[in-house]
Length: 130
Image 1: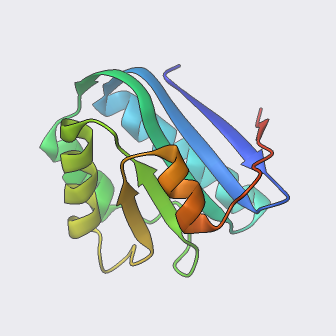
Image 2: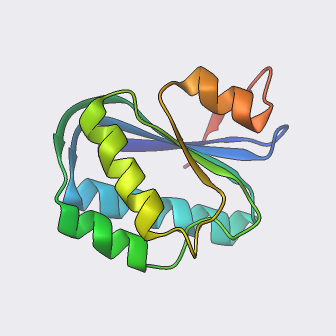
């Protein structure tokens, strides 16, 4: 599958974890799954974690297309993209810049700890989402 979704109800945060090989298709499918979760469970803050990505095959065209799409998380709810590797960080920053008007609450950080700090989460309690 290439990704998992987990939710921390105590802190009101959904976490999308990307794992293994990241392709255009996996990125698009994971974004759609995140949007579906948020639309069915109500607005919440979000973390997209690319720490476990081992290979990166995402095109700039896919990033531009995703940035033009509707936000998965409504404006007013912070979302954080964790990108430890340079190419992931660059892709996330490109997405952030292209989607700035529709996603003003998007932040890009290097570690999951940075994301937790930014969201003021001290003891996350994530459970898998089916």
